Length: 385
Image (cartoon, rainbow, N blue to C red; front, side):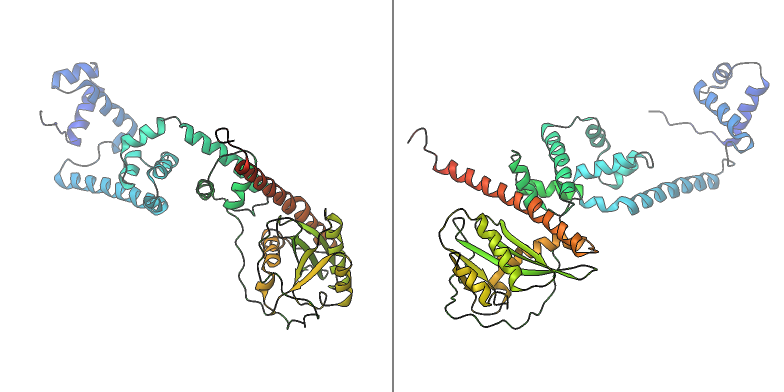
């Protein structure tokens, strides 16, 4: 292989002046002096565009070294700026690096980005020209639906309940897959606030009331175990208190009541709503803490007249009513903490929307799915009968 010829800026300027003075074409002059015609034509174009600034340098080793250093500085500067903006992607998968290269190819050379991100140029071009496979198309379709569900929930649900909604719609997917797609798309649920609270001293348990549950909040049949409790919602107008009654089997909020005072009448109204929705006549254990509303005579009398067995914990501790406290934590994390209620009526309407239009429908779908799974287990086999 012959060594590539090099020409000084002075030689280039003189040969260009010859072309301009002569009536001959660039091709004829190039063949006479032994140059490539295309190269001479390019020199003429550069001279026309640059004028006196074309072909800088005097052809000395110092000028050549200076030009080389400038090119090196330009290359290093581009690499530094690129890595400063996108260097964190080095810890990601190769496809993520390819995505960054495709996004920045209008600002930086592809070869330089591939070198900085430690991937091959041929691999990038092969990835860019490759059509999405069946799995990629399925993920794109699934992610599109997940964005809709996440937006409908106002951005509160995470991967576990996102998967529940997808399974209810007939999608066959795993929790890990949903979590991975959500993380890649920047979708996440609202985290739980952690703070330590100091409650008031619990009241005395009424005579004859025992702790039948012993913190066993698992229920295998509906209308066997209920829990109730009260929480407060802060508004600009003042506090609004919410009392709920939850079935431990279905996690449905069977009864609820709201009032600006947390008295025994509000509790009785919530329990009465749950009693009206009860389908059977068997006794139900209703667990609560030892608050003043629950140890009152009005509350105890109402339970005795509606086949409800009062159950209270042995000690005044939040774990004694963890099931109901868990619902309140969910309610505040997913709805209340992202609102600024001006009036009690505004808070009341939003709480009703959460309970009846968001929480209860979700719990009904969960129960229906559990029933379908149980029916599939007890269905007779074709082989064994």
